[in-house]
Structure formats: C-alpha cells, structure tokens
Length: 114
Image 1 (cartoon, helix red, strand yellow):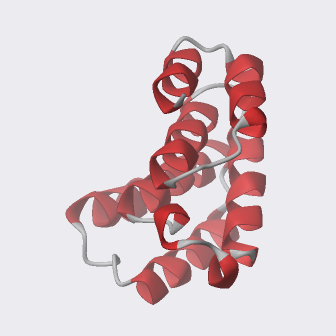
Image 2 (image 1 turned 45 degrees about the vertical axis):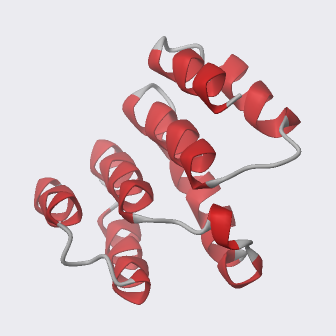
Image 3 (image 1 turned 120 degrees about the vertical axis):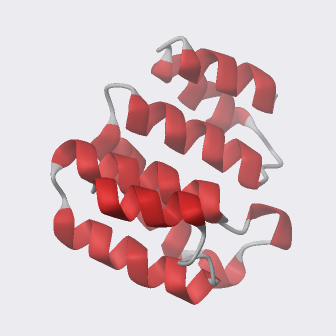
C-alpha cells in the first residue's frame, strides 16, 4: 500500500494518496514520509505541515514503526520552505534535535534551504 500511496503522491494525485493513507489500518514511517513528501513537493505544503503537527502531537504514543526519522524532518522542512513558515521550521528543528537527527546531512541541507 505504501508503494501505491507513493506513486499517487509522485504523480500529483494527492487526494488519492490521502485516501489510501486514511484507509490504511497499519502505517509505518515510510507511509508517513511518502505522504508528507508528496504533499510538501506537490500543491499541499500547508497540509503536509498540518499532518506533521498531528504526528508530532502523538509522538509519545506512536508505535516504534511510526516514529518520525530524518526523512520525515526533511519533507516537513521542505514544506516550511515552500510556504515561508520560518517559525514552524524552527519548531521542526527543535523536534529534529529531540529525535537526534539534527546533525544528519539531509536535515542540515533542508534547514539551510529553508
């Protein structure tokens, strides 16, 4: 299902990607990352940021397979850059530090691009 979601997102069929995501009974970090990256790189960076906030709020209750990683952070920082959300980007940076991925090269590059 993650491959289908990712394909929809990469083709710009974001509504279909979201429908697949919402219909999944089991999600993992790859699923979240595929949706967040698709939204951020497509026409819905605001929605990507909103979904990330939902993910971050429930972080402590997530099963290990759904915990965000450096690719999650990169996708959301890209969304912040797209909409000029510097304050949100700073919050994402704090979250990256909490995850221990702030020194990841991709995360650092995304912070610079923001």
